[in-house]
Each structure stands twice: as structure tokens, then as C-alpha cells.
Length: 211
Image (cartoon, rainbow, N blue to C red; front, side):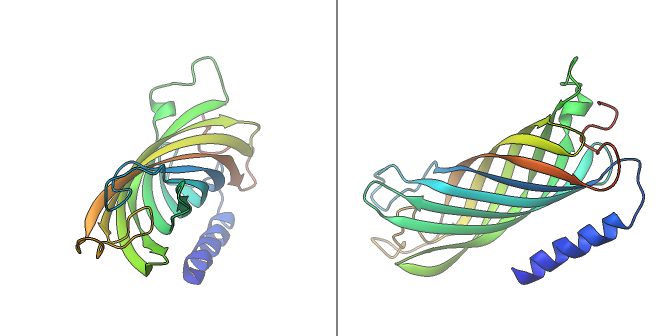
């Protein structure tokens, strides 16, 4: 985790030292909900597992006005109505595409765009039955963005996650109960948050040639 944070800070310093017509580096932070769509418990009972403690932080670098890379840290704390719990931490690397600019979804507005993103996550789940279950995920999502001004924007993100190599159900129980073996599951994450562009320019890559 410390190495990832250090890499983010190093990338920020390198980009800040370069000159562009628009800001290319963004810091993103948001909260929301994490909702399992399958494999909630060994019995298949739903028990309403949900993560009301869903946090996401990300650093995004746009290679140009349309395409960029996003590194993210994600946290979910799943709990159901029986007080059964499961904690999930993921690190991700994704490709970002500004489809709002390409399709001119902003219309007559100069403060709206939409980003598509997708890639890979890796991390672990943990519960009282399993200290650390290493998992991977394929993720893709859509992120509408509204600009408050040239530096700060609001986003609403909807992301689907396909989880692989899972040993722990969302109610926290290990697959050794009742049957051993890894499995796959899926989740949906809804996140609301703020995007801040980092740089000295009067506009940023998300809204360059829009605003």
C-alpha cells in the first residue's frame, strides 16, 4: 500500500513539472454503496448483504483529451441483517475513455461529459472465518461528470465487478462450509464524489474543447 501511494505522489510531481495546454492529472474521491449480485452465502439465501461503507480514491492521468489511465484504491465493508460481515480491499488499474466528448453528449452545455472506464483489480477479502482471501476482478463502468468550475467536478459512477478466485462469501463464511473450492461472483458499485484537476492551467483534459 505504501509503495502505491508513493508511486501516485511521484507521478503527481512528474506531471506537475511538465507544461501542457490543459491539466492532465486528476485526483478523485467518492463514497457510495457496494451491492453483491451473486454468491451472497453458502445456502444461497440473500440476507440483504450490502456495503454501506464503500470508499474509492483514484489518481487519473489523461494521455490526451480522449484516453487516460486510472489507478484506484477501493474499500467495501459488506454486512447483512444477521450482522454477518466481510471486508474487501482492491487496487485497480483501468483505461479511461472520454465518450462524452467523442459523441458530443454535452449538447449546448459546457459543463457535462461522460467517461467510460474498464480494467483489472486485485486485492483481498477478509472475515472472522478467513483472514485473507486473495481475489482478482474484471471491472467496467460509466461515469457522468459535471464541472463546478475549471478545477473541480462532481461525478456519479456506476461500476460492475466480476470477482474471480473467491473463497469467502459475502456473509463472511469460507467455502470450506459446506463445500471447499473457489468460485466467481459479481458486484455493483455506485459512487458519488469529487474530481479535482491538478495543474496550473485554466482548463483540464475532461473539458478541453468543450468549455
